[in-house]
Image (cartoon, rainbow, N blue to C red; front, side, top):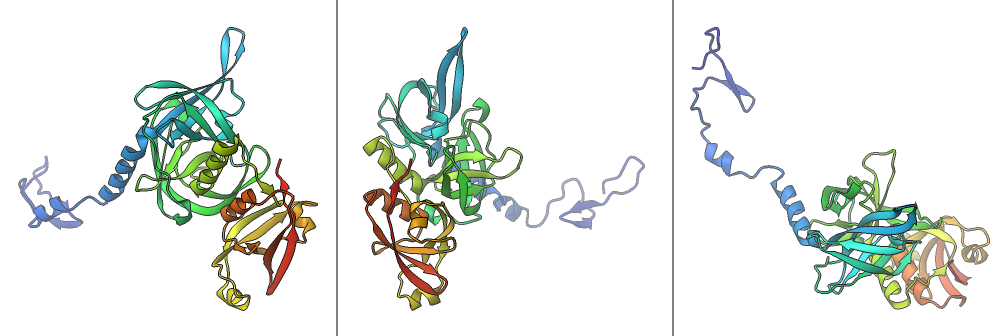
Length: 347
């Protein structure tokens, strides 16, 4: 029996119960205890594997600027990630916009010049092109399947610390965030992932190594509150930028969020929708206001096409000719209204 310096016998506490034991004491089920995985093993493994998949596609993004005296003033810095092997990189508009030259550095240290293909301040997204090919790239996932509490991982370059990994969970979905243009960006992902300046433009990744968002903002005075643009929004924006060099979109003059449609109301009005877009605010004298839409209305269809999310509405407006009237079906209380709205081109 072990004894203290004063000769008294000591009782070893093992697993929360007292027992006398010698120095070579082992529990009867020691082999079973040693073979059990530690509680965080699966969690850690998911993060490590996701980083292994996406990490090589993450780049540090430095935007050089105007000379001041004998020093070139650095206009911006941030992160991005390669979305195609022929050098297309996705990042934030506020990182890439308004710069004189672009430089991208890969995780292996290679540095490349790049040029801006196009940017969309209304969603804070930009596509740049690196002068290289055969590059590692990240797979884009599906942000519509995200759930509150789901594990997500951010990879970026905060304060210049390259390939920094942080992890957390999806805190909430369907948030709105005001962009640098003053326009509300709808359907934002809120997480508790630790982000800092320099993380902007980096990927938000799920446990399978698929990009589900683009990290874009934090609240400086808060802890555990950060935001990302959904990857489903980014897919549409990238297509527009590669096709037109800018995003052409119809403007209704509303801010909205996705809401479930009550089954009773859906049956009453013979709707196929499980979700619709609830109007949160209406811009005075905007197209929606002129068409008679009001706060609280649920947009369920446009020209017979079900509208089940903000992205679905944006996609519809991108395809609909600007200035051409369209018929929208909305629910107002228990009423179903057919109203004519004429989209205007957003500035």
